[in-house]
Image (cartoon, rainbow, N blue to C red):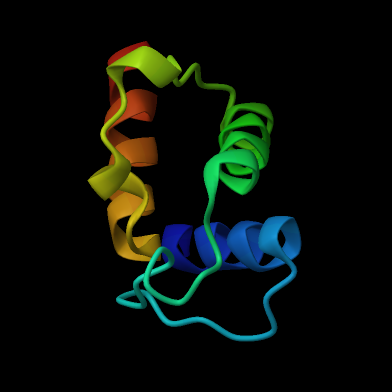
Length: 79
């Protein structure tokens, strides 16, 4: 379920028709410096978490699966 939510959020934020959990968002040209900020804001608003940009690693945003792991770790830290 979390995977589907993350993928839908990514698709809506980045205006992508179809992506898979292991797709490389940087290699495909979907993520750049501006779009990653939009994605961070949407993740924070959707999941009620805070992602401090200075503590993030770009590899955490490379694939939807990596983004899911990042979100899940922040959700667990707030419980």
